[in-house]
Length: 177
Image 1 (cartoon, rainbow, N blue to C red):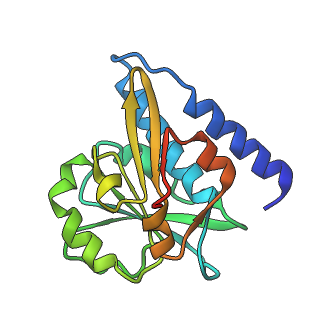
Image 2 (cartoon, rainbow, N blue to C red; image 1 turned 90 degrees about the vertical axis):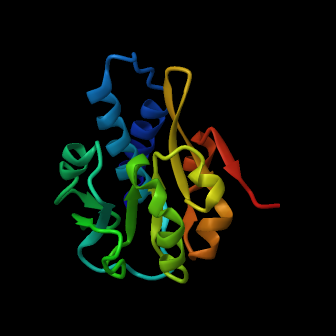
């Protein structure tokens, strides 16, 4: 990735990390969550070369489906294009490089986590507390700001690495020490 492109993306992530959202701005919050997902992809390194397309799987239906669909065809990571797929809980996760699971799918987490074992799949959620239970990135709210927490041991187990720049922006990073 070109340095100037990376700097622009980091700038966008910094701007999003500091964005205050009024309670009535639900649509804006959804857009910010989708932008976070896009930027998390940009700042993640997989243990192997990814092939076209980069598949962003969404478990079930999410309240940010419309916003996630705007990522369809967007370019990420060395020119790969995003393909957004919706999956049912029992579907095959092997095509996924990223899995988004929202609060409505919380009850599926332990089964999903078991089925993802050994797979290099970035897991992102907005379900409160799932970063403590093995999700790699959890988007949440602190006061009037959207923030995110990172579970590094979960990412390492899957062979994923995150940019130090992204980790600096996280509200909390579980280092697993």
